[in-house]
Length: 449
Image 1: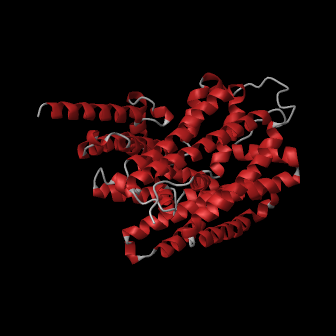
Image 2: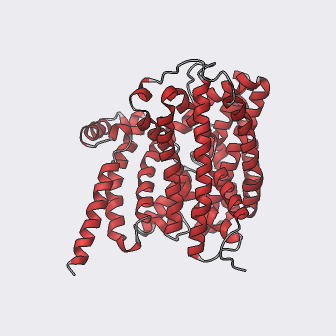
Image 3: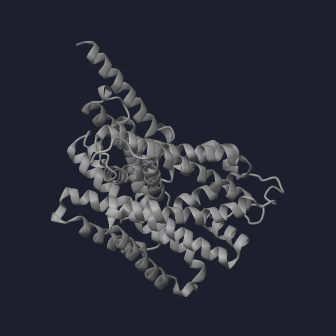
């Protein structure tokens, strides 16, 4: 029977599910590292971080709701059908078995497990850990009809309890403010801008588009069937989830800043978090961290695998069903995970630099009023965005591409003539100008009829 609205308990369950899908290990590591580097400027830095790490994913969720679409493919199809296939497949493979999903296994291993493993056994230990990790992911993902129960009712609350133990112990340390803390040079010069860039690196806008299919189906499972009502519930549950993320980001950034009282500036947030838990809890802290990171990565991996399997099954590729794509995704992610965290990171960066601008522009266009939208607006905007995104792709690529004669010439040209290219935002100004000019042109054209 169709309902008009969800109960608040149901909205909370969906919000916790969405939070659990978004909040992987990287979301823990980035703000801790930011807090350490920003030090006394942590307030401005975490504000910038929340704008891009919280604001952009919320816009992605809003785009799914306001446009009354149910998938990445439907949004991308507003450009044209070939682009919709390209973008959807590329997005799900990138945040799925080629990069993001195997990275979840390697991050949880590096942060939570590697301290307990002798150096000469790291490769076989990673193999065994990743095998167990993806067997668990496979088990839960094959029961995707229960994803609300697994993630919303159990895994997310377990993760929040474990995280709260560390945060409460650290943030209520009476010796946290004994000395003046100085930021690194970059965070001393422009803490807000650095926070914006660090939040941009979470890439959660891509995940927001990918998880849209899961949250919409979950709302339907609770009895909401009308598109407009689904749109309203998507925004309500999404807002609750994003607010929780913002609060935790602030707490983690403060945790990173406070940690400078007893540990030096760390190489990354994972190392800092490991040292923090060891400082407060000793060996028990290391075990607590290992469990927390594994739970955080496990729940996000489940969401990514389910989203890919549901989407590819609807495409009817090779007549494979959802369970077949689930098995393929887990197996491929397991194989990729064993090349190691650093290799995955270096290979994924250029692909993300290409896809992320396209996703941002799609989200923005989807939020425009319907009478402003047109196929020409989508097609011209995406074409203009794609060119500087390709230049960002070349810049972030391995040396054999970025340092080749052609690659070096293109990046030098872009550095001179494209604003924000050095920051990874070469697409921003051309895309903005193009969208504005297209909207003005459409208005003039309609007025002349």
